[in-house]
Image (cartoon, rainbow, N blue to C red):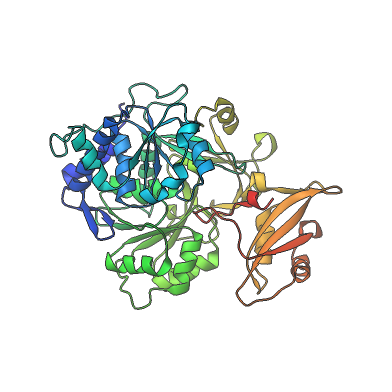
Length: 511
């Protein structure tokens, strides 16, 4: 069966509901018809600089119309999008863009510094284009391609041939992820993978309708913000309220002003919202909130739900799974502390050594198989082979267990496991004990080499504002609640912990 692209899904929405709002970006309001026409211009602009089917297009832009037009324009041109973190360094940008072999780069003007000298890293020079929406119309006009409104390019069904050896047909996205190794690798996601996750979300309490307005504060360069926060709402005919960056108070102002119905966030965002509450704002349109990308503290979820009067659905997934694998929205009520049950058509296994099944309640590595699971890593057949079992299950490297209700509860990343004298220590259990100390705001535990025990636990701790505690006091506190081999041998006091833009703790920077 011919695969529909997400650019074609947008065109179908524009034909069915041309006047409905699609994108709210600052004071700009884009209807579906206007957005679809602008995507045509972006596709024509990319074609004008030589971008064709299967070519890769780098995206370095903040949330907003510029990012959306570049993404959907690339898809309509049959190209593959390569989103970059807006905080990327020049070295990181060169590594990713060279690996992807981009033919063009679309960038915000104020982010171009990261692209200085980029051609030196590429086999072929890449055209660098301005992301501003007005730039596309000018480019298309200069190329004499703007012949008729909305008729520059027909929605494309994807590359007729694989764009590169080993790449799947219909490739939509190279989503680069560093995992626990710190080495960027491009997860190959097709339009089919992304659309499958939309269908899966449709079967949960997170289902969207044409009447929804979704807060687009999650970074759109990340798979969570891109597919759940942007592509899914547009495929449903909902509106997306874009925020270039997250700041708690202004984001709540936007929720009130634009009658936002769905708030998507990561744990630090929900904690900030819960700490402030609605105040005097009218948030009566809000009907649900969802959280993902990192573990959500149950106390934060409860405070948010109490303050805003809506349920918080927590999900779990990875870049490689487009991203949602499980969600508490599969049940009738949130189960704080768990990440819920698998979405439809996803199979999960929990396995121990040699991939043997573990008993219910015992921790094991999470394996996943389903229509949203990626095709492999870009131009890396060996890493792709190692990422899957012979039966086609993806090795997530996350450790979890199933509770009595069949909900998945995550313990840690497999690569973060600390082995002390042959015994497993999961960093989360050490951290959970440390944050129970009244002076501790956040904690991260990592393993370091030790000549006698193989590894030892070192904890990095952030204290609450105005609070005081010594490392010795915190070690003594942990000894009252943990087995001795699990207790940190050393506590390092820090002003903050290193996190990704999604709020996920980056343990590798602490090792």
